[in-house]
Length: 270
Length: 239
Image (cartoon, rainbow over all chains, first blue to last red; front, top):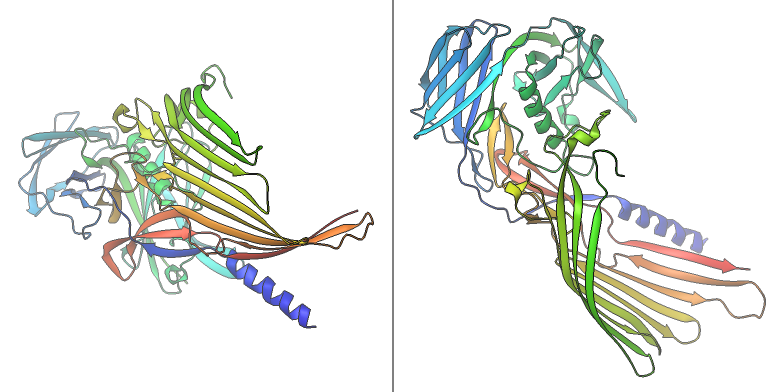
């Protein structure tokens, strides 16, 4: 029986060695100079529209992004309206109450430090969400909950959707974006996984309040988020060669300017 | 595969080498330099969509590549101790108008140094010991140079493609083989005992970047490694 024991030990040691391992390492990275980052949204809901301007930091620095003050920020539309945004907080430019309208092209012009940055975005037609529901998925022995968005895609029109999922007020760090390239006119059940990988602490629990912001976005903005999403799926199981997502802002600014419609729905996890 | 839109990949290589065997072919030496140009190389566009896309060809970019380097090789063929050592110093680069501002950038498989060492030692009549060691520069990868925030999440800013290197890979494998007694019958067997990655080095498989869970104001790089030390026992037989 001694040989059998030894065999067992070898098999166990062998299978331990087969598991992969992860560790935090120090790496050398290039250092980039600060880049201008513009994150602008115009929505179809009457209210305060916000455009944030910050700068990027080097990879090795803390995640504290300097606000850019003193910029001249204007939005015009293709029917002659002109909105001058005012800086209400450092780096945050707002325009009181306005709403964007479907079919109009909104053009952003930002002047800062003698540079001009422009971007244009077309507000798509809104699509109505029917409901949110709770779905379950089983991974091995564990059952995990996810939020499903139910709606009907309008037939014959190219639609792009972005979802922002918040759980108890906190935005998840995943990018949810889809189009109807393969699902035109279908009844859509879009599953939103709130968690990354296998971290069960991020699971939805009974009593959690989840809300979904359902956005209809134009094609360039879809490409922007789609690229970001492919890269977030990094690591051994996927991910693409990293690159900067294609911004619709000129002059090499980072970020995006999106005219979109949205609708927010809430659900309490039973 | 070439098509109406994809031209065949073509490579031209020139090499100049010097080969020398000494002591009745007991030792073999060679040194070689090479230069290779590659046409119609293929990369994906940034933001390429591949899943269920009937027009994948529209997601491709075409450019060219080049590789050049020096290869050295020495082999001992006779005696109790035999084996070989090889070393390659090389560079492999690609050039696409649409990527990296149209400048040459390292191909992912670019390896500045690549070394392999194999030694086999016959210990008596029945035992053979062997070792295999490899060392190579890590793959060329793209690390972020900066970071910023969109949609409330940390997003990385990239400057040049494949401008960084994964940590180097090194691995030592050892094994011992015991030949069965020669009984003069057709049946013959041998036992092999081996250790893969005997030094248990954590070679890089991938590196991810993420916010530190306990301190979201910082970012960390996480390396995933696959196989550590793996023992093995093999019984071979022929009849």
